[in-house]
Image (cartoon, rainbow, N blue to C red; front, side, top):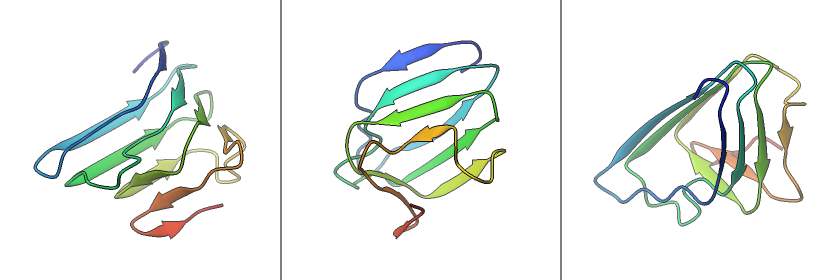
Length: 87
């Protein structure tokens, strides 16, 4: 995603993968792989892109150019990276 706004839940089944990159001020609001069933999900954020969680989310790998994660609104939910919550 580049200069995009997206909302809704991202649902990936056990035989599917997702490589999601957000840059240039993109934003996403929703839950990523809330059922934790995806084969793999890779998420990459630049400093200008923002995520707002609406439920606990699960990814296999995560790269954020903002090491303080200030571009993520956890909204009281957890973001799990390979089974470990980063917040």
